[in-house]
Length: 238
Image (tube, rainbow, N blue to C red; front, side, top):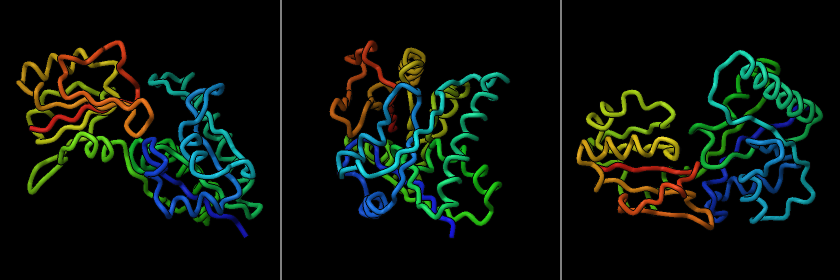
């Protein structure tokens, strides 16, 4: 009998934000699949989980997914190889009847590595049982820490990865709440646009929400650009 694959969101950083359902499955699954951005790096998701219970008896599958934005043929070929290796490692264990928990920070449905594997897994194993366990996203956690509502009544919300900022002005003009993710590399451009549209004072910067060095800045004029972080969000609420 083939095992079940669980994709589990473990929240943005605070281990107390792991849901009860996620914790139950994590404790029961004999194997954890852990995505990493660098082969020599550590997994934030695994660090979160290890603060909740002892993982010493778990088999750990490390899945290395290089965090590069280029779509060059060489890069895509390298990614395909990495993804296919992870798919085979997962299927080898599932076919032995082992359940696997693929853990990811935040929520699996929001810019998660897991969905790069989803179709490949089902293509090779159409009868595979995959269960998605939602987690608290950095978006929800950031709004809660900042004390702002993301949407009320007929307000429109936009969630934008700032890697793609070509039509950002139109987005600011169209939506009532704009959540910009991973703003660390384009903050100068964003600040200039916020000033132009008179939205600077309606913006809040949050980085590493739920982690020990969480930072919230409600006055962007005091923002230290040297300390901008990959795990960063800007909430603009009109």
